[in-house]
Length: 215
Image (cartoon, rainbow, N blue to C red):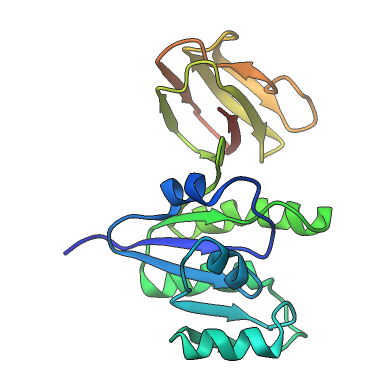
């Protein structure tokens, strides 16, 4: 049986061409999940969501009816709720047992919404899901023990602690190396490194790092 790979589309904006996004979101046995207005972004990319989840404050009634006719499953929540549509969509993926999720459409909108979207990576991690934010030329994910980057020579990479202190951080294959060092959340030491080799490795002894890579 093929492993399901879920693509979750948030209600943000698309920064590049349809062709560039196609290389990220298309593949075998892919399930497309839209968080509310993310359904419209997915349609722009030539796909219809298998499931739309949210309070539907970002889709018009005409759009709602359109996606229903296209066969999208609709899971509606009240506007007064304790979770964002993105969190509810990740919860749905967890209940389905899907362990690998690519998330697009997180950029755009209010800053608080963007920050909340980024921290959904930790929600996924704590629920046993490997989630990545991806846009053409941009990737965000977490490092809890070890992360290897291949064929990213020349890319800019930043490491941001999600804990107050992340211990035993080692970096190889980049311009600025570390060897079992500390990174503090309130200090900017991990920002704007450059990958200089075909293989770069980041390891952590204790704590959680957010990595952001521009390539």
